[in-house]
Length: 322
Image (cartoon, rainbow, N blue to C red):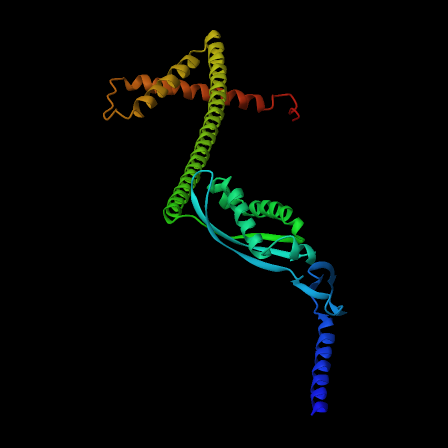
């Protein structure tokens, strides 16, 4: 009976010894660090692998995840500098660098990070206008990251990224912004249309100007040609008058008849070409016209006769060589 009792007691003691021995052997998985406490005081940190603790004296304190983790930042209302209220949420990425500091320097690590991030979101975004808030999200993220990372450095963690997910203005403000955007687009469209009309008017005016200049150039050229023609006509008329005057000075009556008949025919031509002249009355003697024409014929006859006599060979002489 006593032997059986000692046998059971020995078995129990053996099981307790085995349990105590097993409790001193710790396997730390990859991506984790364990803190070791000696009678409640931190002594060392266990890295991934197999470790043996001193029985009874040492125990595992905190099991810390050393991988990068993400925390959701809940939505909160933020009042901007121009008194517009927006609803904002985001995410924070962090990684534990020191398991001992993360375990013993701060209580409730994740809650502390969330509250610190929300406070700084209100501080940073509250110092901006609504338009600046909506257009400078990257600047907001960078500023938040700088502030929060500096504040959590003593906790043994590294804040790698802070991203603002949603910025939701009130519905009435969204409608107002939509109307403002529509008005701005209509304004730009009207400006572009006005610029197009202005450019078209400028081009049209330049075209008309060029046409007027070319027309003026044409008129000037035509005027030069007309003046040149009149000048040549006047020279011819002056030459003819000079010839007639020379003939008159020599006493040639037929030249006078030619001059009078020529002017007479020109006058009749102008009278006949008048657009308002329907009936032509000529209370003139036909003999005067015939006499004038006869004078012209005599002048032509004498001219041709002189030319013929000059070309005939003289008697007793030789034919002139041409």
